[in-house]
Amino acid sequence: MKDNIDLLNDFNKNINEYITDVMENYSIGKNAKVITHGCQMNEHDSEKIEWLLEKMGYTLVEDIEDSDFVVLNTCSIRHSAEDKVYGQLGNLKPLKKRNPKLKVAVCGCMMQRNESREYVIDNFKNVDIIFGTNNIWKLPELIVRNYSTKELAIDIEETQEKFDDYLGANRLYSYKSYVNIMYGCNNFCTYCIVPFTRGREDSRNPEDILLEIKNLAKNGTKEITLLGQNVNSYGKTLNHPISFSDLLYKINDIDGIERIRFMTSHPKDISDELMYAFKDLDKLCNFLHLPIQSGSSRILNLMNRKYTKEDYLEKIYKIRNINPNIAISTDLMIGFPSESEEDFLETIDLVKKVEYDTAFTFIYSIREGTIAGRSKEQVPDKVKHERFEKLLDVLYPIQLKKNSEFIGKKCKVLVDDFSKNNKDYLSGRTEEFKLVNFKGTKEQIGNIVDVNITSANTFSLKGEIIE
Ligand code: SAH
Ligand code: SF4
Ligand code: F3S
Image (cartoon, rainbow, N blue to C red; front, side, top):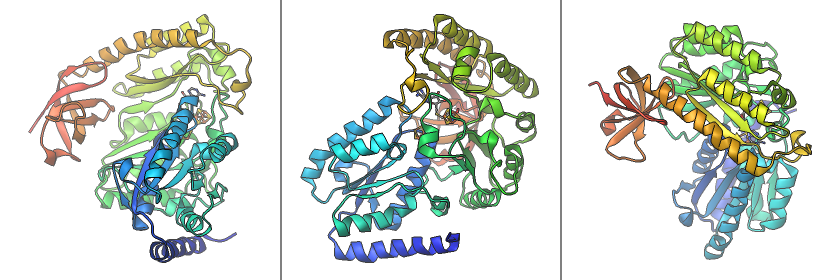
């Protein structure tokens, strides 16, 4: 097996080869656009793709109509996510007619699934390049291959070396950054496609993670979000295993980093050490995303989540006891196969007991190849939608109540940008991940400012900056 230095040399050679061969020998359009579907992992992968494209001499453009190279970074989590990509690929057909130079690449989770990849190959002849979630770095080579052979260039092969770690990232914000700490997932929740698209769990070396974060801090990053499908099992696959909380303590010591967040934490693996880290570590934000999925222990068992409603509640009470100020969010899934009205009412009961600050709510979607996808006891669509609406009717008033508790408080807010809905207002996030809108100036973007909260609604807070 080649070592990483050889790979790094290969990679640099690829880029050079690309620039000399392609840019000089072929007449190619240089405007590129990356379209991203799915979760933070994909968002971060797209940042790497954009970095690579700029290195290759492309200019990133906003409007798809102006682009000569479109990269679609896809998601498979629900049926609707895949349908959106098929729709976009269809829309690209006339664009390619208008701009014959246009090249189309498709990557991400859908391309890791044989069925979706074959469907794209068979139905969208306008696709030039396909690559998987672990070989973004091969993009220059694939472009060269496509230009020289004029045929679809594919690479979805999984390499042992997570060479994508060596890529830079064209980060959306200079003051907050995603950092991968692990890849893949070993949990095989029976509804979920991720273990099939992202492969087995694999942790990055702590030294590499710490070095990346130190470099980010030097370049102005104040907030980092650590990414992994189940960060609580971080470190188990390493030659010198370390725990996730040990990693957090080390990151907390890095000068310049002011806020630490992470996604996602599996309830079965959350440790006491991690709970205490929320009390001990000044930089770890008071916010925990702890997906429950369902309040019915029967359904949780069928989902292979490996905890019961009672186990989960015990963990919530414990962490609130250790840190009463922590904000908690979750993922909830409605209509898992065989979910009865009683099971659904258990979910409602759980939501009332926990009083979540926010929740992501999903309607169960059949994923071919998963155990739940083969179940004969699928819940009718109408029932799923009715339960979904009832769930929101319970969640939203709780969300409003939790937000209202912030009125009169002084919060530290990392300013993101001008508010999307009202350009007179800035918006940013509190430590608890509450969205706050307030009047301010452009110069405050990227800073952590003090804001007095004056009012609250279901999805955001309003406040006044303390100068
Ligand atoms: N690794 C994370 C979840 C990643 S997927 C965790 O275990 O918490 C994000 C969310 O998508 C899941 O929490 C789940 O609620 C939802 N999801 C996953 N598969 C789904 C499916 N087949 N249908 C509907 N929602 C799904
Ligand atoms: Fe999917 Fe479960 Fe892994 Fe999360 S932990 S990615 S829900 S299999
Ligand atoms: Fe989607 Fe893949 Fe993320 S399936 S949710 S983009 S890991």
